[in-house]
Amino acid sequence: MSKYFVSAVIVAAGNSSRMGLGKSKQFIDLLGEPVISRTLNVFEKSPVIDSVVVVCREVDRAEIEKIINEKGYKKVRALTHGGAERADSVKNGIAECDERTTHYAIHDGARPLISGEDITAVVNEAFKCSAAALGTYVTDTIKVVNENNEIISTPARSELRAVQTPQVFEKELYLHALENAVNNNEPVTDDCKLIESLGEKVRIVLGSETNIKLTTQNDIKLAQALIS
Image (cartoon, rainbow, N blue to C red; front, side, top):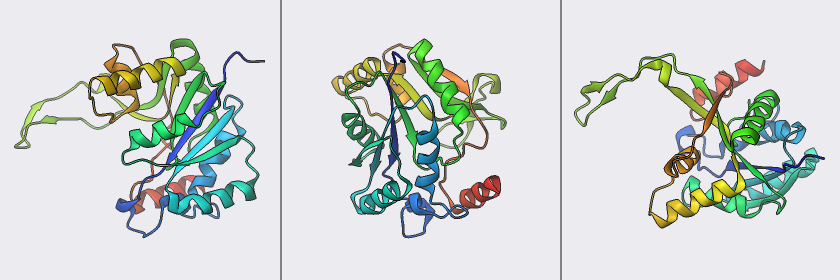
């Protein structure tokens, strides 16, 4: 029996406004299966994930519950409501996690093409170093600009990574980081940044280029092409 217990928090509470479809992107059909179902499929089958909590909008709850019941997902422990900001949604999710949890694996519900291999890789890395996240190499040249859109610096691409999810954290470290952010009135814009603010390190694990986040309708077309 493993000494670790990993709870996945699937954050699916966005309003999908940039998608412009008038419905949650969690229910977009990707070649016969909704986005949230494709996401949950991978976590349900993952050997390193013990439990799953889904964070969603109240208006989407009944439909997501229906999908979970129809698919017979055994690992989904709870559904809970989203908050005003993503950070609030994550807090609501971890509050519902199993008390045996040793690590949180926080994932965007709108990344339905996550692979089981990538989940295993980033979780195993977090077992070693307490905090790990998937990321990919940056292929474009990135420029830092000022308020007038004038270039002020050019970071070396070798030092840059585009960060994905899951992001996996040892439970006590993450809770301490949350408390630290609250005490210092720091806005929580990124889970990795929470850990960085403590002066702790987050290890980047090379992820797959196909682990895209569905944000616009072009992303839907790309996802369908990747699946087919």
